[in-house]
Amino acid sequence: SWSVEGQALRLRLGEEDYTAFRRGRALICARCSDGVEVFARYEGLACNTSGWHRLRPSEAQSGVATTVAGAKAWRWQGRHDFTFHADGRLDTPWHKGVWGVAPERGERFIFARFANIDHLLHVADKSRIESTRCEDGDKVTVSLR
Image (cartoon, rainbow, N blue to C red; front, side, top):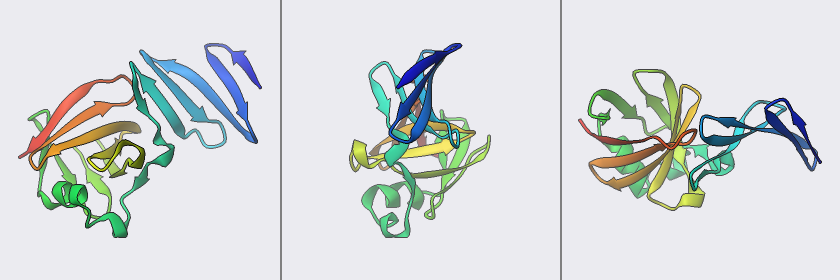
């Protein structure tokens, strides 16, 4: 079932309640019980965060994980230092965060979550990552420092 509440759409799927709303030009869906944003879509880019999880020890030796965590420091937009730790922690100039796999997108994709914002990252090669912010589709390049 569903209903309209102000500028949001309230959905009931099975036993869970969700709220769908616009943030800028993005459509966001959040689980009401805990506020976790479980889905975001922007101009054809789906960030289905329900399958994302922080890097697990068994995944730390995968090709993408060793590429990202093996580098000492990355630079966001050529200006801000980033460190992806092998245990899934993420150090950014804004907030501590987490990173891990985005299994539905394929082996060259990971996610980063910091400042309560999700980013889908495509590991293009050993020195370049292409990031898309899920809430509005903003794209930046992350490169080795």
